[in-house]
Length: 249
Length: 349
Image (tube, rainbow over all chains, first blue to last red; front, side, top):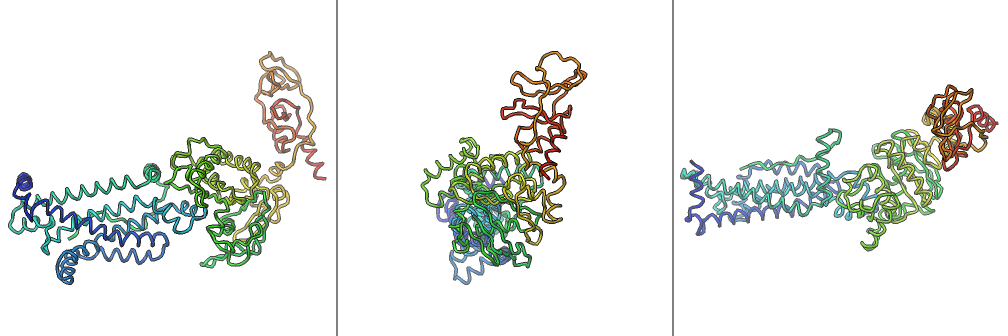
């Protein structure tokens, strides 16, 4: 019943044109998400690579990213909105702050998780630290690194809705408006759009993963999975629990 | 040649892994470091290519202090093989083997051609080169590890428990392969293991180390077995060392006697003597007992091989007669355990 109404809202031509239309809101939402994840990656990937490669600062990293996760997103958005004098920058920064921990954890865990024997062999063959990082550690860390990006993306897609509180036309708008005027069709329609966007973006990143993760690494990951499900003797250490996309705000 | 001069390694936690090690690894030989865990054998090995640096003392490779060379350059000139191979999962077997040549600036084409040669050298089919490490068996991975270490043709090879993760049958095959390669390539090899049988099997010289980083004895395997320096070494080389030391005594002094033979497939009659069944090429097939029943034979030994084989052949034979064969496996004669023991006794005096 409510879904039929939501569907009607979704296909209503009135909602498909103008400055507050569905395409505009999807576009704004998308821009915020991609921008936030890219911005977060620019910070978190190099930091994760450094800490994973050198092993230095891992305690600070784990503590720091847990602290970031504990920040209430809505409060952060409002706070940054106020101190940056309104506009998109504050919201973007808040989303970046939210996206950093999963990317950081994925990158760091990816590097740390590379078989110690493989890293030892790379050193023993005469690779310099930089060669070891780019030629051995990064290619083998890609599955977890991409996993981190996917987690971050899911979280940001869900959370970008709060930008609507400060007047930005993201897909949070129909949610807020729907609740305010008790128009549940609009509310559910908006939620469906957010969910679809999340699924689509996740699929895109999964596709990117398939393209960039080397075939040998994919095969080993699969072999590792079947092996560890057959017998429990293979220990896998996962130093930082990689957070799965929840719904904050 | 590798020279350890009064080398000590103390870790930050206060443990002393290697304690005043003085030792020379001769060029073109396999030297095995063996001992219980915590004896410093792996630490000693890893100081040669500067995976670790000594707290004090000097290590010379071909007369040059390793501390005077920057680690990546040093390591590219020294082959390195580790437990479970440590192959790069994201690279094909061929590219794994080509690692060091590529690092030293070879073209990709030349490095891959060299890698293909090495796969052949270690006895792997060329088509394995296109696979990924995870698609190989443990034994194959270990061979690739050896090929990778040999790729830039380094004079020195460091092997850190390379065969300990594979099953005993495969391990024995890999040991034979290493000995065959060594006969061909004449490298200076340092080999670390905790398995004394492996040490005795492949080492030209064996360094037995004891917990705390002390060198207990450094000698050829035969000496280790016959004249252990102290109780620790005697215990470590284990039981049966008297018998096992016979592996290093050749059987040339043991005269073989003739024996009555019967052709395989003929009808057997009873007779007071045991008779050896041979095929058309004179290869031993088993024994015919005095009551004319056919009994499987014991072990065979090749004339001139170790006296351990001769003794075992006599002890395992149902007739009490050990069977000697020539290089083609044809009957050369028979020996008794008494004869073999007499030779052993006479050598002792």
